[in-house]
Amino acid sequence: MAEHSRPPGNVPATAEEDAPTVVVDGLHVAYRVHGTGPGRGNAVGALRGLFSRAPSPAVRTVHAVRGVSFVARRGEAIGLIGSNGSGKSTLLKAVAGLLPADRGRVLTRGQPSLLGVNAALLNDLTGERNIVLGALAMGMSRQEVEERYDSIVEFSGINEKGDFVSLPMNTYSSGMSARLKFSVAAARTHEVLLIDEALATGDAAFQERSRRRIAELRAQAGTVLLVSHHHRTITETCDRALWLESGVLRMDGPAREVVAAYEASAGGRGG
Ligand SMILES: Nc1ncnc2c1ncn2[C@@H]1O[C@H](COP(=O)(O)OP(=O)(O)OP(=O)(O)O)[C@@H](O)[C@H]1O
Image 1 (cartoon, rainbow, N blue to C red):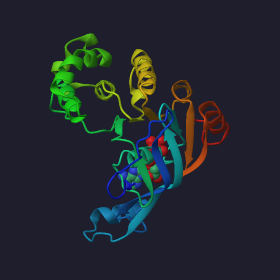
Image 2 (image 1 turned 180 degrees about the vertical axis):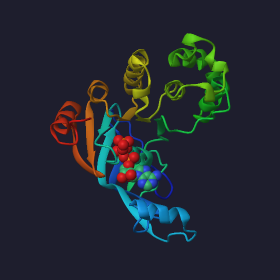
Image 3 (image 1 turned 135 degrees about the vertical axis):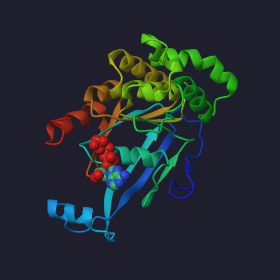
C-alpha cells in the first residue's frame, strides 16, 4: 500500500460487503503561510507592510489537521462537522489527494471525487460544454455522456426557468453552478464521493433530489463523506459523523449522537 503524500495509495480490493474504502491513519496536514512577520496583525503593521518593498521572510505554519485516524467502509455516509476552521475541508481535500500529508497516510479505493462549491469551473464555457467535459473527465465514454446528458440537465434543474444550459457558466448564480457540478459528478457511481457543502447551495427541491441521489450512490456500494454546517442534512443523510475541533478528531460515532454532543458544546450552539 502506498501513501497519498507520495503516490496516491490504494486500499486493497476485497469482496467483503463492508470493505474499507478510505483509511486515514494518523494524518497531519499543515499549510505554510509566507510573509506573516510580527506586526502584521495590527493597523500600523499592515500599513508598514503596504509601503515596505522588503518581503517578509517569516513563514507561519497552520496545523489544520492533527493526527486524525478513521476507516470508512463501503455503503457508509459519513458527515464531517465542527466549527469554522476546524479542518473539515482540509481533511476532505487530503482524502481527495489534493493536499499532501505532512505525516500519516491516506489510502483510498479508486479515485475519490470531490464535489465542492469552490471547485474550479470552466466559467467561459457553456453549461452544455461543462457537462460533456466534466463527464468525460470522470472517465465516462462518449456514448455514456450522450445517454446521460438529458438526465444530468434535468437533475440539475438548470433549465427550469429557461435555456440556461446553452449560456456560459459565468452567467450562472453560485447556486446554479454548484447544482450543475453536483449533477455531473452524481451522474456516475463513485467508490468514494466527497461533498463539501454542495447541498447547502441548492434550493429545497434540489436538496431533496440530492439526498435521494446520495442514498442511491450509497446503495450502489459507494462511500460518501459530507461536510456541512446544516445538522439536519447530516442526520438525515449520514448514519455516522466525525466531529473535528482544531484539527483533532473529537468524536466518531452515530450521526445523531455526534451532532447532539456538538450542539451541546460551546462551538456547536451557533452551527
Ligand atoms: N490555503 C490555506 N492556507 C493557509 N491556511 C489555510 C488554508 N486553508 C485553510 N487554512 C487554515 O486551516 C485551518 C482549517 O481550515 P479548513 O478550511 O479546513 O476548516 P473548515 O473546518 O473546513 O472551516 P469552515 O467550516 O469555515 O469551512 C484554518 O485555521 C484555516 O485558516
